[in-house]
Image (tube, rainbow over the protein chains, first blue to last red):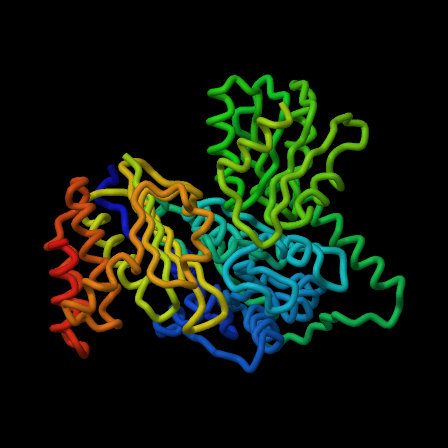
Length: 346
Length: 160
């Protein structure tokens, strides 16, 4: 049974609590399901907020706020997420600590309003740039809280824009959670990026191609260095694993339940769940093949292979393993389906 | 103990409201709960679902394929619920139409009748007391139009 200090909270309340605890000062946004309650909840808190005319304006307002030294964020989904790529590409180019909460919904276009995992590539690489941004994928309400806190900290510490990539199932679900256990988490404070009275030339436009190339090379070097510190995965029950399920976000928690039940049937299966999608926890994945004799990777996701693309891109080319996929774009995945799919392969 | 309840009806019938009250009452009694809505773009008229799990252990995934209790409040919802033939207890509005009409329960209170019915079931399973649910209902709706009708619908539900 639950203990006394648990509270009944929606996913969006968890995000809001994380933003308040991270000492976030402002939000700019345009309402879209399933992230409306983040905007309305922030407004109700009385903190600085503006509902802009669209997501383009919201994203640039966040860029402006962080340039002025304010911890700021926006929240969106689907078509709004697309419009945010313009400002987010600028945040990437200028190394601005903008934070974006994404509740994935089904697409293309307006699609469905609650759930999918179809915004993975968009979140990771959706701009005219190189995808030098941090993308986190929480699998539970506790992790949604922790990664939202971390997104602000990492953005301000390493100066890359950060995306908390979740979905409407997570944001609209209501569960018993106890966030009081995280009360000692520390914040990286916001700071003024340009001193008052100083004139700084800080471009996101370059007249020379060489200049842009130099700038990008520097940023990439930083990104790779940061990656070693923050790339993270949950590795579960992989001892002697012959089959490795790879899943992220809420599907990751489903896959974990499936692993438990499959192990009870003596099927040697484990889970690799990337917690950060950008930077991808490549080393942790490659290392699993040093000790184990994994025969098959099974990528499970609510999309036609967006996570699978990331996995295949990052897995060291000399690793010899075959792939299977369980793909249900726009649909939730149930434990029984994962068990059946893996059971069938064995 | 884990109990999975799937509530299905048309948008506007009050599916999310009754799910909300059942969640609150179960949580107040120390159970882990998970509640997740599912609906389309429509504000009204589309199918509205609520997946509700009540358990004495922590819950990690809010959806499921096999409900223990399934409520179907409309024809449109019935079609969507065809894949859940496996429910242990299935409540269909068609089976109660006569009774609801006899007792002059208004359409807008049908959900409250089923709230009573399910609360009674959960009371039998020692999850909550029907008075708790009634208390929450009173708090939510007693200042709103047709409270008498809703009150009667709830009483009829728990008496069924």
